[in-house]
Length: 333
Length: 301
Image 1 (tube, one colour):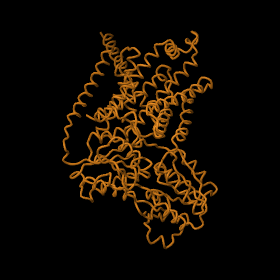
Image 2 (image 1 turned 135 degrees about the horizontal axis):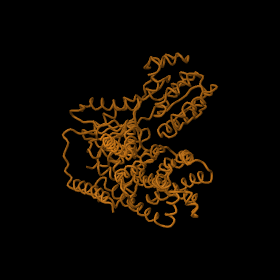
Image 3 (image 1 turned 90 degrees about the vertical axis):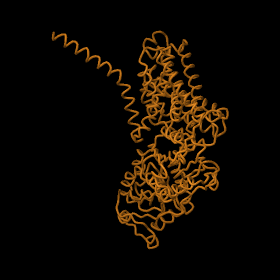
């Protein structure tokens, strides 16, 4: 047998033996400053804001970052194979709390860390992702903040702005579970309200141009609804280019997507999700048990209106909405 | 230390992919893109079956069977349909994407709270991350051992001959089409098995988990080749793939620990792989320049 191979195998074996020995001795050096591991599934505006919110939430609840708590931030860039490695990193660091932003990150952490608290942020359907058993009493070491959007409120707002609306196009990414769940939920709500709903799904951002063109061609739909969809959020300008050309208003669920050219949204403020998560992390650092900490939901949305976009599409904003709206004045960025 | 153990465990699991791709990439000498579909296929099949209550090992074996069928499709497209191999693979891979969505009924299926090969009761005595190492070691030993034995049989030798020189193999009465198809079936069955293992280890299957997987599989083959550049027996070659897979995980961990932005991770993977591929050429170049220098010096005398 080749000597180099034998050498390498022996080397790896020695490393394993040492590691096994170390973990048997189990010298738990208690960290002076607790570490909070934060893993973000990918970089895009909404998820970035959640991370910002988590920092604010921690600071507001008495944990100054760098002094009372350390943050180890990891961004998986949407790559599934990185998730496990990063989760193991949290495991080996003995993070006091590990936070997963977006469901895949949270699932990867929950699957790796069983004996310390795990907090998910912005998981739309934590029960179907098996993160928690039920919302009121999560039961294990995992709890968190869900980002289920207030869809009834959203539909009501759309009907107030567009009284003539008959047909709604819903566009979403079929490989994005939370987007699919939200799209289907909205479909049922709109159908119950007597509207016609046309569903359009894309497989990746490459399909968005073609599919959205088809959706608005010949004014097929009166308005477009976009759920919380990471892929579409990343390619929003493609969608808006086509809907603007056909003069069809777009109603997303996320505030950042209104900035990117949507007309209005009863949106969950992403930063608020982050702040709620930060607050929950602080509570757990103070000693709360995840098993008995109920999953947090954002009860109301903020009404966000893009004034320039509304004017461009000839939509007048009634007084009832005007009073509580936050306006975004510019189109784009 | 735990992160190193984790990397070794991950390397052992991912090595299944390297061994699978070795059959098509090195022995048959063509790049089989089907793997980017069969990897998530294996994950989807095994995760779905486990959530339905099936034994995790049986689920992984059925996943391997499904991967074999995908390999058969690519093989038939290539040998009978005369479709170029790259295209045949891409066609199958594209089709599998939709099939995976059908199988799972959703894009991402979680295994949280379910028993998998890596959290079974009998592994409870082991410290963190060691179950992955132990199960990975057992499985990869069985796989490489079985592969080495198979390649020494008459059928295995005919298979290798087909890869070396299809024309000569045919003249010796070997059915090269059948050999190629068989290679693709075994290769994709192994890749799907690897997908099942990775999904069980990660705790979920996702339709997009196949993207870029061919680079990961290639990396273990090529890093192994570069690290152990000497002449080797087939069994040793298979072992270097496993070691290469572990070394690749070490590099990724090092990159993450060095504080590099995860945005750059794919770039790093590609650069590492590129360097490994270029190394033999560079070595030659450097020796060549030495020879030139000597030559010029002598001429000057």
